Structure formats: C-alpha cells, structure tokens
Length: 130
Image 1 (cartoon, rainbow, N blue to C red):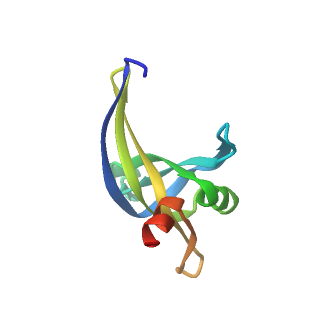
Image 2 (image 1 turned 120 degrees about the vertical axis):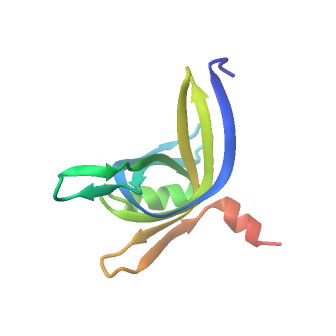
Image 3 (image 1 turned 90 degrees about the vertical axis):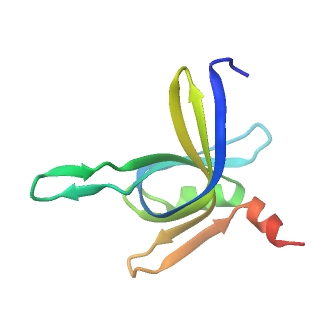
C-alpha cells in the first residue's frame, strides 16, 4: 500500500435526497465485474434573493458494483435526484481527506415523485438470504 494513503474509517450512511452532479462512468475490473462511479451533492441551500449559497453543499463520490453498477450507468443522468444507502469510507492521501460512498441501494426520484429501485447490491441480496 502507498505510504501516503491511509484508510481512516467506515460507517453506514443514508443520503435521503441528493442530486447527481457528474454523469456516471462504468468500467470493468480485470475479472469482468462492473463498477460505476458518479458524484452527488446534497444539503446545500441557495438564497435566491442574495444569489448565493448560504449553507454549503456536501459532495460525495459514489461507486457501485455488479448489477447495481450496470443499472445505475443506464438509468442515472446528471441533474437527477437519487436516494442512496451504503458504506461511507473516509481516507487520506497526501494529506488531503476524501469521503466516498459504496452504494448498496440506489433509488431514482421519478417525475411523479415516486421512487424507482435500480437494484440492490450483491451484499444486501446475500445478507437477506439465510
């Protein structure tokens, strides 16, 4: 492992509503498993009168694997609202802190206000089977 890289912590996290800020990009591991990456922002507040952000947005890099990765790549678009659940990882590289979320559940907000589940990750599917 790179001595300048240090993994700090993990925790479960839900993001109740976030906007996709970067088009999803899908790649494959050497063993052929799909992984999709995109970013989201949430929690900010834009003051229309002052024409400025009065509460800073939180930005997260998101990654997902397998069927969830394939469905996310097909369905997600920049600007769309999503609901996410997964494992947050905080790490540090060359003195800079990075936060990312490995998604286990992604739902898209439809124009009707309803939510559409893309797919559950293999980790959640396995956890539900005893």
